[in-house]
Length: 121
Image (cartoon, rainbow, N blue to C red; front, side):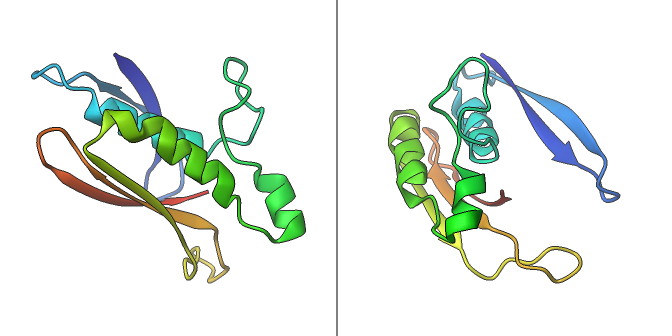
């Protein structure tokens, strides 16, 4: 399997990184990258998967976090990890000190590696 993940350098310039199946034949990092990209995706934004992403625009307007959609993502990706937990973060700020909505992802891969990452959306 192969998936592309967008990363940013220290100047904020985007680039795409390729994540593929590892030498042991495991796809844990592929699915983790796909999960991160899906968290950054707006609902109905994907031309292939209309039910993927979170409704970021309506969430900003109503000031209600899209917990239901993150729960659906957690359930969708649960079969690919030993353990997965997605939780929203409340005190994340950008470089200018403004609050930024973010989620913390904790996963345990099939080799027992625990990965924790914070994803601003």
